[in-house]
Image (cartoon, rainbow, N blue to C red):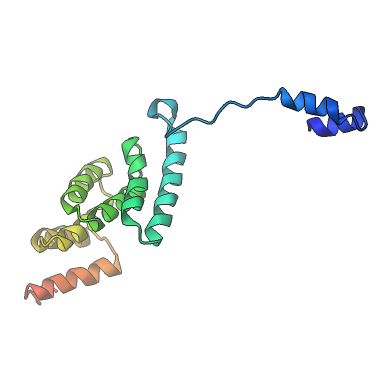
Length: 169
């Protein structure tokens, strides 16, 4: 805009334009992550969405630890939504921290009561960690409440069959 104004007013006097532009200074960009206190709720939600997208990018590349770190940033700011919480829990379990994933899911289930996917993810991680009894109970309660997820339902039926409970299956 300045160059256009200059071109219109001072034909071919680039020395004046150079002098003006030499006086323009920009503040250095902030270093590091934004601080929680500097962000309102709307900014926190946007920040969480961006972090989630970066985490998904890493996850698609098979970089679970990096994905977990990015999914964890909105968690650190205290403003995760259920989708980010699911992604964080899943990658936490994938990097071998199933106890931490289950503890985290317990906290999130308390924050988002009635969110069936969180409960379902908890049962899935319980199953992965060898606690099929708790996983079976958790899924049974979900299905009794009307939860419908074909993959989870098929997994639940498989668990029942493995336990020999074909009648329930």
